[in-house]
Image 1 (cartoon, one colour):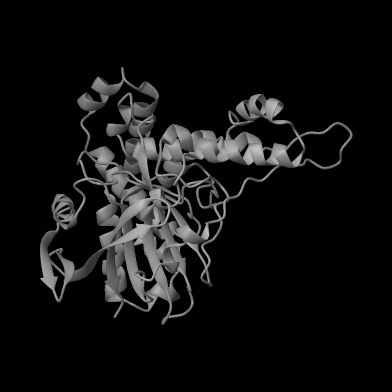
Image 2 (tube, rainbow, N blue to C red; image 1 turned 60 degrees about the vertical axis):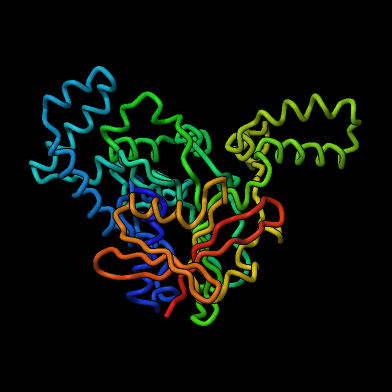
Length: 363
């Protein structure tokens, strides 16, 4: 599934029930899209996990045995998991446990909160990673688990969490696409679903923001500068700093945050690397992002305009029209049941150039 379908599904849900913009949890709002290869909040969203698991089992069950046999040479262990899933469904046994493990109803607490299911369509943000940021005030919650970036691979996710939970769930859901050699190393878009003023109907704002809005410098460069500033504060000379920064910059975030065993110490200290959003990257402080709106914010590249968006929505199965009224541009989406009107505009990020905004106004 692509990001545009994910966004449109959220908008449609809020169009049908505007009160849910503040009455529902942000994870519940996101869950309305479905088609997730990984779900982090499984305790809250147990109904969704069961639903997705049943659809997954049906889809895997439709794969002919000859097709599975042909894929064994590429990944025999994964094919065996698929075969087990098929067998468990036929027996009426627990299929969810095979997808997420025996303790599947526990929230994972690892990055990301959702992973969109991958399909064979070349759609924008296909298989994207989604992280949620919810706040009762105007501030965007800090990034605690991993620094925000525009792209990450599933290998990156494993390095961050030091666990295989996300990879194992995704590989089963995305089968047979997941047997491809580059599946784990392929770059995927990172998006952040942000809500501020979450309890105030007259002030709530929701935005699905591409990681480019926060990653205005490469993560590696940011960390190098962090270490350099720390060493400057410690009084390390510029001559010595260069080599030390080079060594520290090679550390993974998970390694930095690991608990340390210290001889004779009764505590296990650990460093915590968090990232707060700079004032100039607070998307909901931009005047174009009005109260009671739902927004999609993506980097404006060459060729990215309302016509490009119209084509991308068509790939996702929507009928679309571009309208020009009173000096404004709108994209009209029609999914066969509802028509959604989205304002198309451009905002200028103070540190990372132009970004496209698609904006829906809550009724």
